[in-house]
Image (cartoon, rainbow, N blue to C red; front, side):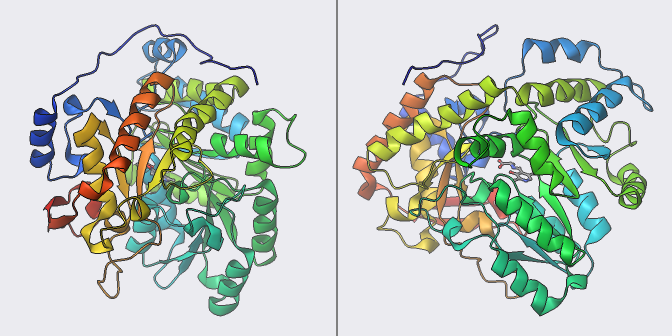
Length: 456
Ligand code: F0G
């Protein structure tokens, strides 16, 4: 196969800091062994997240200058609204400062005390908003999603039987909507097939239940459909996206991922009544329905980013770069989630550090060890991220205990991926020297952001 390269060239560079091992050891202690608490100055290659860390294009930087900063009726808002309508296909759009702003509005408007909200695996902020409004999240993703070693093409699919069972048990009237994430972050960036989206929508329509997507990484999902699903090989990404969205009633969106910006998001829907109520609520939490917490220039940049994200060459390179890192690790026998997902490589920390038990936070410990070894910052996605059960107060113990190496869009080259691969492979060689951690400080909600640890 002929090799391909980045479908862009570099116009500005940002030099990186490279610390000594001793300096990194100090930084690690200062941050309580929590990579969320490291200063970015102390990080060499930052794979904490792909959220808001994307590189904007020259077109987007240019657009910042023409942002209309009017308090009401900004021209930039109309450009963003048009982009969302054209690319996502929804009738109504409300801007929010980021994805969780949209999740807050949606949960407040639709979730009541005692409701159940099914989803194809949880996401931290999404579930937090559902629970704050009295709802209970119910996982309806296929079983394979919880097993890092099972290789299936669409590991993010909704298990229709689980969904049917839930509907039969609690009744459609207790289910305000089904949240379908495309792709599924916590399963490893795994996609949902078009067939499954269609079937989920059909089932929900039969019961009068809305389907709301978490569209955060929808373009990456579309690429996997193009690559893996019969009948889509020759279809442009933009057409696949429109078909995906046609099987939903609305979405929440974090613009900080697939829309190629540093901040922003939106809530979109087809129902006029829900839109009217959202307009009333957006002014309480975000701002006028014509800016929703974003500056005019942010909306300008996001409108451009949305169009850039559906470029077929861009998205192909994006997915291939993540796979480039993943395949090096797989070839070296590193335990990881397979197949490689859309935005990140997920190391299986439970298998990597099989001498530690879960209460020693293997993923947290591995992320800390990786930083110490090479200055690469990753993120824990395991028992710490999963928090505690809201009724029993016990630790939620997810099957997956992972370290996420998340690749920002258009930021690093494949040489950076090589440095990351070398470090992970070296750590795997000396994995038995890596010690577990204990938690010294535990915040009550979303504890992973601020928790502090020390070696056990
Ligand atoms: N949904 C998914 C699937 C996400 O991955 C995120 C954010 C959100 C919703 C919330 O969006 O951050 O704009 O408020 N994920 C980031 C991450 C934080 O690192 O995975 P937000």
